[in-house]
Length: 619
Ligand code: ADP
Image 1 (cartoon, rainbow, N blue to C red):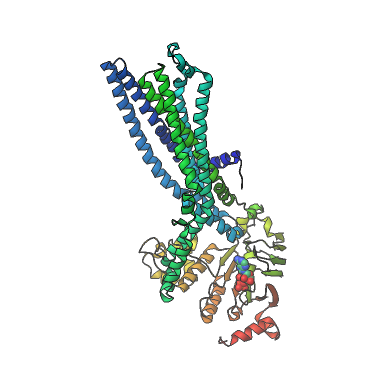
Image 2 (image 1 turned 90 degrees about the horizontal axis):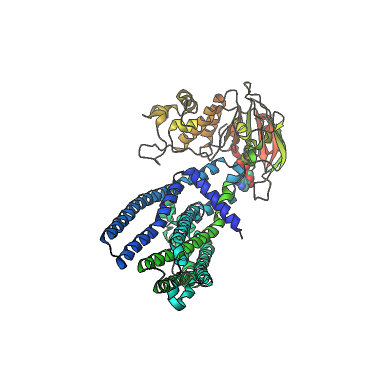
């Protein structure tokens, strides 16, 4: 996609502002360091010209001393300052690599769940990370471009200041034909050639950047394969599979087949031997031509008597550095252009709107927990899916009751819960809380009334207490009670560090590993600690045998108190104690009632499922 110059600059500026937000010292240091770096060559040129002039003319020792000492002092101080700031810049550059991840982390945590869950979103994030890993393209590149631009601008200003006199001082009348060097037209032509050649070199460099950019897709794919294949053997579950199924050749083969992009015969190698390499070589060689022009013009003026030999050094040095700065500036512009597309991708991710946060009503905190929830003709398809995961679902919740949702795998039970908690919005129908569409409530407020333990819940490598409370600070007594209610009490007693025990060993050897059953109890304690009016168990016990599951559900019934509890299971025996049972089948509610009432309908889905499962259970 083509972008305008304005877009290149505005995206660059926005990226700089964002990076400045996460690392406020970085850009001031980069500015100082690169101003110094750009000025240093001119300082050397200026002082050596003074020394040479004196040597070539009056040779006064006291003047020579003065210039030599000044040269040594100035270049020495500048070099020390430059080394100091360069070191700071490099440290901050490393630091900002990590810090900019904060921007992505915050976004990943705050975007709508439905967006976070979409494959497209994950692909977009992966693409941004791959562009960055392959050559820093994206936010980091904006920092590099800024650095190059500071160097270019200061280089041009310094160069102009030191070369003005090359054009301004005329050759004397006595110079005969060489007086043509005073002609404004010639001076203009000379300057035009100088700038033209630098621009041509810059343009050629832009071509190289374009080629590199076009190859980025190949490179990022290569990196993707590399990252996947080279980290695959380290993951816990894969270590086992690799050995049991002898997967080594499969992995090595996939790696060498797909990662050829960086080899000598890969797309990069071919481009470097072909047009990309040619452009690059031409850019460097025509820059050398500029130096030749500068020498001829300057020496002719000195020959004609416009200035002395010292000034020749100054003008040649300064004009060469000036041409180099013009080239560097164009190079930076080429890099900025090449980066725009990647910044656009980055901003597409960071700017994803939060459509779900638009509600404004608060969910009143009702002491009586009298929340009425109703589904009215709700239908839902997952993004990118053609089939309805739920179709025409209508039901009303009895507050404070125990509700069970049963049905075969894939019948829509979890989807129903995800819609109830507004992780997704339905395409048709509406869900009402106390008679008002849930989309009208403040999203975080609405989330506050649910505690859910999903089947694929995750605990975090933090202390046990923080896991239960979901925060660093917590009420230790309440956490202990929640853990005890969830059946984790005896295990908690056995832990010397109690609630401060670190879960898992990601951060060190003193973390503990917990079994699947223990993890489940901690997850249930987390739901209890939140103390929300609705508490939902979505088959967190699927890994347990039916008897153990039934036991947990029955215990949960006891501890969930006056909350509205919803149990989901494809095992009917776990839920038979519930006040009301909803039977899901192919995305619809096909039956509703108590266990006894449902069982008495011999031809119903419930009775059919019950009879199929009954052989496994002792009733
Ligand atoms: P259950 O909880 O009863 O096992 P689900 O509600 O998880 O069933 O799934 C209902 C249907 O929706 C299934 O056909 C399933 O394949 C589909 N489904 C579930 N999650 C997703 C998803 N994230 N994207 C697309 N389809 C999904």
